[in-house]
Image (cartoon, rainbow, N blue to C red):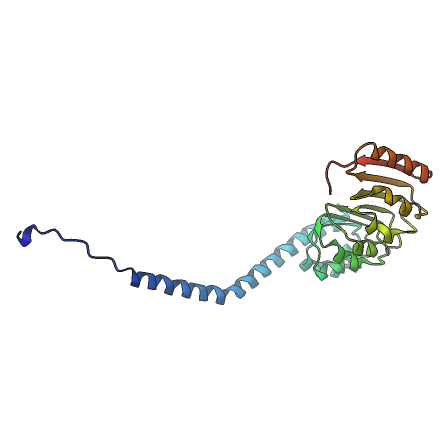
Length: 247
């Protein structure tokens, strides 16, 4: 067969140089990412701080204009700026807290002189925040909605000398530190286990006037518990409710 009629065959592909180039670029890219990551994280942190301060400024403007007296989800990086504003800090009566509360900077919120109500909504590490709140004289109302509190947290809130209303999910064993609390008047509790063990604790509270117990127990347990509350706490308005789910 003549050379004019020959068909060029494809040459074998050598993958080694290509793979080498890919590995070289991958290694170089990894080095670049490692070198720039601290700077990128710093920029992200600065941007988050800027946005947090903007959100705080918007809320403080409404507080100054007397359109509200509460603060929603203050972020740790904004607490210092809040405390500097002496006019606003004295007007805040209520705060709503969520997510992770372990940052020590949130403890500065105890410096709000007229803070009366704290609502925890789907908050984590409430125990850490409560430890910074110990013996805070102005607080009268605490509510924990889907926000777990351990016995350590209850020990902290039990030191609040003017606490009047408490809404919490806890076992009777974790609530023992509330024994003989002198100022509690209204108590709403989701009893995780053995709700009847709450009664000896409740009987020690001299000013208790209203009790609501939610439990996963069913009838007739609920009926028996309701009868015991009425019998052993005759001066207290009480009721027992069946909870749809744990909270």
